[in-house]
Image (cartoon, rainbow, N blue to C red):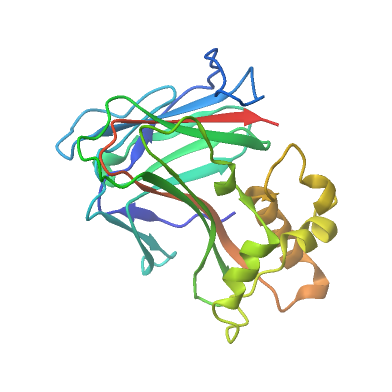
Length: 270
């Protein structure tokens, strides 16, 4: 996948890390015991000037109110604006690595999950926010792409919200895309043919090595987003699809934090 330069106006997270195996108990009522990777999003105030995190730690703004970040194309033009802060996510290699652990220094953070698919859970720990009416923290997964033109499009993969009084919450939806979600995305502008995306079931059945229905195993809600992007690249490389050119594919998170000091995520290989 081609990468584009992305900068955030405000803080996001992360730092160089290590592959982490966590022995803590699995979320209550969840069968995913055993090995998993942990990501600790540590909320810091805007004047924090320390170095990046380490291991599984990322420093993020304690409050993202009035913050936004931009997506840039290869020539440096702004092609997208989002509220909150940005976390790039990769799915490659054999090691779990926090590759940029301090979003407060340049408005950008990133981490890499080893190749594979995961069930994902999230919880807010630490002291509760004093304001009882505070909004929940949220993470939205986005897939960006172009299709033979200079226009960038953004597919909403899913959003998860969580508050301090919540138990562990299944956040897998931010990593899995369904036929219904792609249909909603396409329907927003049927007049734009370059915006249109093929159904995940079509991609899985024709451009990946498995059947879409049999793929939805262990309760996962759809097609793993990185597999979907691989399938789009395979489709674009097919000589029968000269009119399709899915490119500049990338996946990232949009994080909004109303004031929490610790947001924890767990990634269970499946």
